[in-house]
Length: 269
Image (spheres, rainbow, N blue to C red):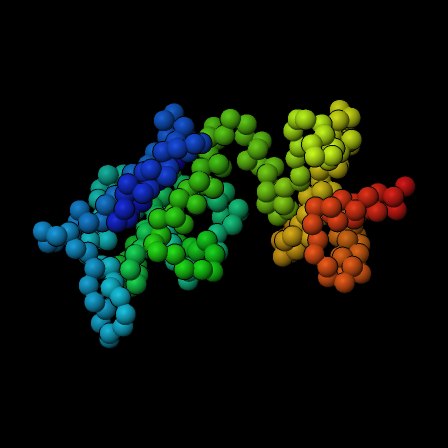
């Protein structure tokens, strides 16, 4: 997977991506990073790439030509026009399935805006995907680009030491990840659930699945619309929702999640 980033701050991208898992993957040749400085394609000695918008308004706008020429430098380098993601609050919200889809690309370009945005004409010319990481405003597209690249990288074979972790963690199957525990067995008078100590893999898998469902119902019920659940699990979800409603919408924390799980287990005995 080859990442190309069109940005005014290439060092920000390079510093962020050349660390941790992505840094190791770049070093091992599983990923490559090409941070292109849009200022290098400016037509003035001060490398100025912005100007006032027609029609007036606050702030400055990034000009079309430097952005276009920086994109063309990538096309020249790789020999074809790749998919271009423009990071903008106006785009579709990024999610795990999108990460999996984008991970299939050989080359992927991220266009990072700044100031009040980018001249619409160049966006129409080169952008294939408009993507947002959430309904809030940031200074520029660099942080969203790094968020997306980090997530997409995890879907690239070989990037993770244990590929299974890329498939079973948060949001796999549109369910949140189950709680996890490490040594010691007891900490601050809190014990590791007995089922995890049992060595019974089927029971552990069942417990983890139930915990994922519980956490999704209590913390991110919006994900359930696309969750991959059996009829039995949907009945479980309905029961959980009913019990949460009976608690008069009180705050649900980890302890109450465990209480709900215990009640469900007792009822099924």
